[in-house]
Length: 70
Image (cartoon, rainbow, N blue to C red; front, side, top):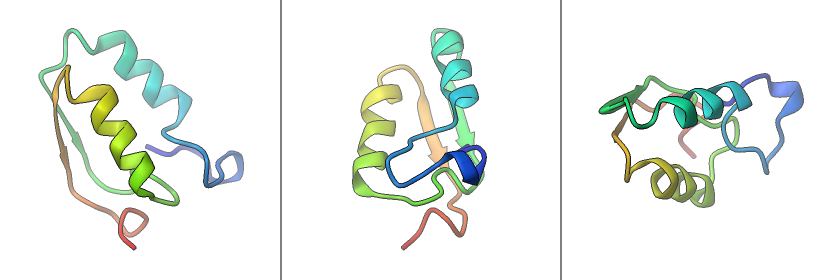
């Protein structure tokens, strides 16, 4: 969900395509399953942003990938 590594850095959140999809369809979505590598470089700030932005609209479940832990 983080997109291409070369355009991402530690400040980036999700890829623009993922954000666009979620924003466009959040009123139609009940549950989202992310299956790993949500962020290239995870941080507490990014996890908090994910939940504060989208948890009011749909349930979020995550199966962490190698880029999501640490």
